[in-house]
Structure formats: C-alpha cells, structure tokens
Length: 308
Length: 260
Ligand SMILES: Nc1ncnc2c1ncn2[C@@H]1O[C@H](COP(=O)(O)OP(=O)(O)O)[C@@H](O)[C@H]1O
Ligand SMILES: [Mg+2]
Image 1 (tube, chains in turn yellow, purple):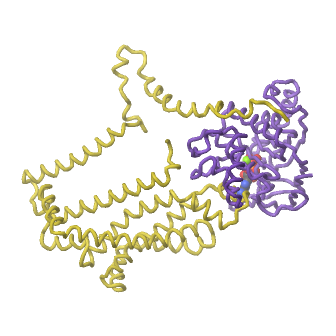
Image 2: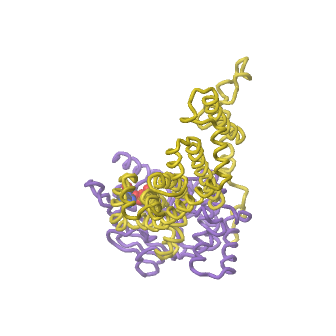
Image 3: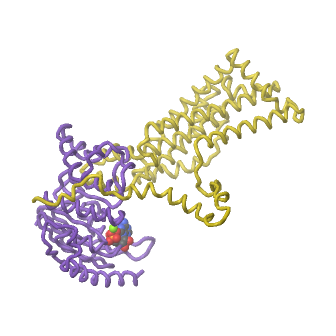
C-alpha cells in the first residue's frame, strides 16, 4: 500500500511547541495591558514585581539573598559595638570570628566537626538504608502497609527528645546512642515519606509494565522504584536536615566530643562566642549538605526537571 | 476472529455503601484480524473499562475475552496499550522508551536498535531519538507512545483516547499518522475516543456506546475507501455518517447529563 507522503513528515507539525514558548510572552502582554493608552503609559509600565509568580533574574536573586545576610550581620555588629548588648550574652561578630579561627587553628573545631559528621553519616545511612526498602514495600503492598504504616505513624508522634534518657540507659554515651537518636528521629519519618513517593508513581506506568509482559518483580525495580527515585532523593535531602537537629540534641545531653558537646562545655565557661560560632557553623554545614544534595539531584535527575 | 468479547460485564462495588456502578452491561464484540475499530461514547460510558478488560488490566465481573481463541487471563505483550495520559518514562530518552519492552524481553542490542530506528521513522521522530520526554510536545510524546506499543509487535493495539489531550491541528496530524501506519502495516486496532469525527475518519467500524449502564448501542461500518486523505472529512459520505452518529450520541449525552 503506497500511501500519502503527508503522514510521516517528522518535525513539521507540532504547534504545541510554539504554544509553549508563547505562554510567557502572552502573560507579559497581559501584565502590561492595563497601562496602555495614557500619556504617561511609558512611565507606568514598570515591571510588576509583586505580581504573584513574577520572575526575577538569577543575579537579582543572589543579590537579595546576600543583602539579607549582610544586613543581619550589620545589625548584629551595631548592637554589640554600641554596647547595647553585653558581650556575655551576645559577643560581636568579630569576637565570634576570632574565636572560630582560634579553635580552627588549634584543631578543636576540626576534631569536633569530624566526629559529628561521622555520627550523622552513620546514623543517617542506617536509617535511610532501612527506610527506603520498607517504604517501598508498604507503598506497593497493602498487606505490608496494614502491618507497618499505623505502627510507624504511632511511633512517629512520640517525641524524640523523650527517648534520650532511654537511649542513654540502653547504649550509654557511646556513639551507638547518637546513632540511635538520629535513627529514631529520621527513620520513621523517612518510611512514611518514601511510601508517599512510591504511591505517587502513576498507575498507568505500572499498567504499562504489565502490558509489556514484565513480571511484578521487574515492575517493582525497573518502573516503580526507578520512577520514585527523584522523590526518594528529595526525602533523603529533607530528612538529612532533621538528622542534624537530632545529632546535636544527642551531643548536648550526653557526649564527650562533637559540636554539640563543645556547645555545652562552652556554656559552663560562659564562652558565648564559641556557642554562637558553633551554631552558625552548624547552620553552614546544613546549608552546604543541602546544596550538595540539590546539586547532585540536578545531575542525577535532570531529565525530570521542569523547564529546560 | 482475532478478538472476541463474550458477554463481558463489569460492576464496580459501590463506594461507602453506595449503589454498585454498572460500568458495562453484558457486551459482545467480534473483531476480525486487521480490523480497525473505533469506540465512541460520552464520558463515563465504560469505554476505558471495556478497553482495560481487553488489555487484561481489569477483570470482567462476568464473561470472557478470547484472543485467537484463547481466553485472556491478564495483561500481556500480545496486547499493546497506548494510554491517554502521557506514560513515557521521564528517565529514558525517546529511543530507550521505545526500546523498553524489547530490552526487558532480552532482545539483543543490534536487533533492538534496528526495530527502534524503524519505528522512529514511522512516527516521524528522526532527530529526536536522544531527547528526554519533557523536551517533547504532547503530540510527540504520544507518537513515541504509539511507537513503543508497536515496537513490541502486539497482536492487538489498544488505544484509549490517545489524542484526547492534544490541540485540534496536532490531533488531525496524529490521526493521519496512525491511519497511515495501519494502512501500510495492517494491525488489529481498537481505538477509543469521544470525538465522532476522529472515530469515523480513523476506523473501519464505529461502535457507539450508551451511557449508564454502558453497552454497545450501534455498530456501524465505515465504507470510506483507503488510503484515506484528510480531505475525506469534508466529503458528503463522511458528513452523512457524522450526522447519523451525532444524532445517536446526542441522545446518549442528554441521557447521561440527566442522570448526573
Ligand atoms: N475503579 C473503578 N471503581 C469504581 N467505579 C469505576 C472505576 N472505574 C470506572 N468506574 C466507573 O465506571 C464508569 C465507566 O468508566 P470509564 O470506563 O472510565 O468511562 P469512559 O472511559 O467511557 O469515560 C464510570 O461511571 C466510572 O465512574
Ligand atoms: Mg476513559
């Protein structure tokens, strides 16, 4: 059957592409539309910054973010330099910086950070390694969901802080106790979030796998888990943030090393500059891990990102 | 007969003590080899239910489906499906999406590449092999989905409103594309749509389904010569068919609207 050549023509059709790129243009017109016609139209046609969802440039974004940090730093500096707050409550930025440099110089800071990072890595990896398979399982099979989900939901609402004395009874003040607290704080949340990630896999993906003749086991690994992976990664990123909190909590209460331990000791000697320096350091470490995870997400799951 | 639907019905249990939904009344249907059947009906009349039962993705409450004389027990690669929703795997390129089923079947790389390349050509996606689905327009995504289904060489191709989300122009081009492939390759196809014009243009037989309880109301052959050019849509014969089916469907739509 020799049929029309019109059919197989590749790229020629596809108006949606044009429609897509036309969308932002159209909304721009809509935004400026109200200002048309008057004498001062040109002047009134400013960029509508406070239109919901309005875009700003990357440079502007970074500039604003940096400005907020600088501004807060200045307020802090002014409050201390003017003598308005006593250094024992809030030392100046310079004092905090000097103290951090000193602690870095004699190696204390690095040793503290190293042991804390080690603890969070081990605790978080154990929790994640357990939560991902269990979350996938209860996301896929109602029987497992019935067995595990209500239990996890129950435990999840028990305050982690209340487990601290118990974990010390069980595991002393060794690293195991820190792992345990991190585990209790993250595992149960992770399970539920991974379950949710898995449940969001489009049912038609699974139906498609079946019509292609894939056995259930392969549908689970090749389609369900693969499809949920970006979501699971996001779950890990978010729960890693919480893990930092639980780590420091564990170290504050019972430890002989680590960032949290240093903060407790410093309180005893009224070294407010160390306390504040370490709190800022913890914020920085959290920010860095988060940004690293986000960067990896872009590399690993770039295919799924909206826009190009 | 390639495919036989025998007294197939489907009742969904009522939600929260509500009335059970009779989605499909006992339905009979015989599809000859290489026939192209379009199924048209108002939304909610059981088109997807029928298609999913044929695909094996849903179980009939009664009755059975026979493919080549053998009862269908579940989904399988002998019945390829194209869904209305975009079901390309976002983590695979266009070529890898089309190759997915072949790869899982364990086909050697070289054969796989040949098959994929031939279907890339057939659906007009040459040059887009290495694109991610998110980089494609809706029409291109559905073309890839059609290629993926065809690449596995199913006995029967089932399409559930595959062009339903596309704009009119793209939809017209997609109809021509699919029809062209069918005219050249021959395949047994069941094509579900809610668009009368689409049903007539693309099908050799149009089934009209009625709403609640869903059943096949009319079974009408479309005697328009192949190969069909899109200009056939403005021919008197086409218009006459369209008028008749519009009438039938209008009754159904009114009926369905009154029930809601
Ligand atoms: N899984 C289900 N559970 C309960 N009711 C369903 C289910 N699937 C479909 N239905 C009902 O069956 C009827 C037919 O649905 P469907 O086959 O999807 O219609 P169509 O595809 O023609 O729009 C509808 O009333 C719908 O609400
Ligand atoms: Mg449907």
